[in-house]
Length: 90
Image 1 (tube, helix red, strand yellow):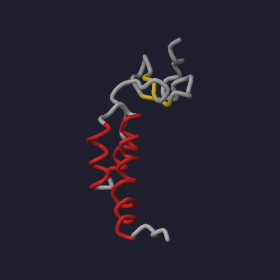
Image 2 (image 1 turned 135 degrees about the vertical axis):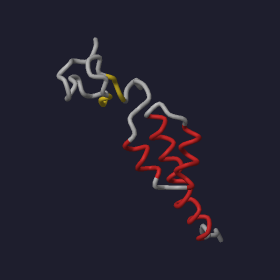
Image 3 (image 1 turned 60 degrees about the vertical axis):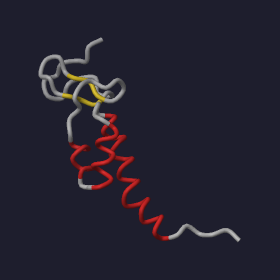
Image 4 (image 1 turned 180 degrees about the horizontal axis):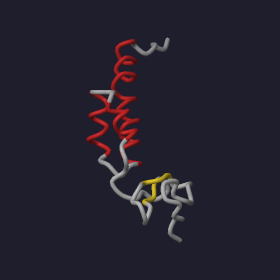
């Protein structure tokens, strides 16, 4: 017969691995170090909120673009800056 997943393994995966991977992906989307943020989020899951609300370091193709006029980062799908009205560069 097949064995079920032991509760200790499931606990380890849900508490450490899932937040670590999610934090790493969020960090990579914001041009930050995947490994550092994965470890931080795995050990301290509250860092998921920190990286979620953090602005990117630079433009990330397909994720964020920086307004030429005011310097704010905006999501890639927005064509006009919501702060100053400047259109995205061609």
